[in-house]
Image (cartoon, rainbow, N blue to C red; front, side, top):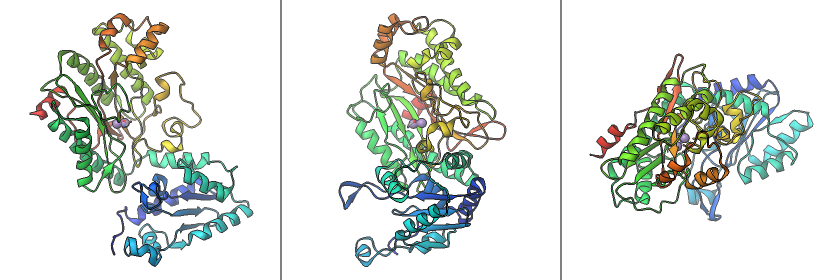
Length: 463
Ligand code: GLY
Ligand code: MN
Ligand code: MN
């Protein structure tokens, strides 16, 4: 073979997952469309292939142009796909057959893709309900319309069943996530060691990508490497770093089996943080540490989020930037000025796990709605924490000039925010610290190797 079978868990893992899903659903036809290859600029020049995570979770097969059904009513599981033709093999080399790939994940029935439509038409004719999860790629949306007609709607029952399974990570998944995080920490340590005046954001972005790629891993999301951390998704890489700057690095690796890591470090570019940076970092670090001490089974992540906001308010009050009762400021949403995102999100096969199902279905109790207020609505995980949950803890403190101007002009939360003092911080930038945690039976544990989080740890690593 030119390519060996790509890594999967033992076939029993997938067989057990599918059996459990089948039992929960009770009836119907469950339809799973894998991802296809997407063209970059012409048909034979492609983006890197990324398999759909639901398909990976249930079938483990990291290959393009596959579909599968779990026919609950008839107790059958079938993978649909086509064998390579000689025209393909000239370009790809000999590859494992569909039957060989499927056998490795415990599926013994395979059929050509052309038979999928017939199978579905028959199921529909027999009044079987067809369940699928929300598609997120244009191609899949069109493929589903072709197969089922344009009225077909995603299945909430299937979403909830899968979210419940995937939210509770099994030991083999946690081990895989730990591998992703260990490489993620290597990426962060590489950046801490190399950052100094004159290094560019591009240098950092390239170096952390190299760390992942050298292990055969890739990135779990586009790297954020910026001296303007207050812009939350800053992918510009346009700056040459200077003494007095901070570099915010938010980067993570994805293992060959596509489990993610997601960490953020905010490091000084020069030898040390400036005095003003130290004052804010200390607040961030205390907030981070307290959040990691709060998380345990039974507490809601919304409560941890609001407590983190209150801790930030209390610290900023000490700097003269906020006033009033910190907890009241948090509950009112005023601290969203300084941290407009949530404290964290579920992580697994996706860095924001299952966000394609609708984040409210994953991060909130069944039927609940998200708080629509600014700041609160960005909290992707709000529900009661349960053993097996894997998620990020990522408080941040940002000074966003446009947001300051807008809220100041509107007089928003002026009982809590000291706008006059805040003017001087419009050039501060932003900081965040992020690691990935697991809820255990009686508390929580960091997954993988610990990353430098405190100022002392970060500065010591710079050497
Ligand atoms: N890297 C995206 C996030 O931290 O959520
Ligand atoms: Mn994150
Ligand atoms: Mn992140």
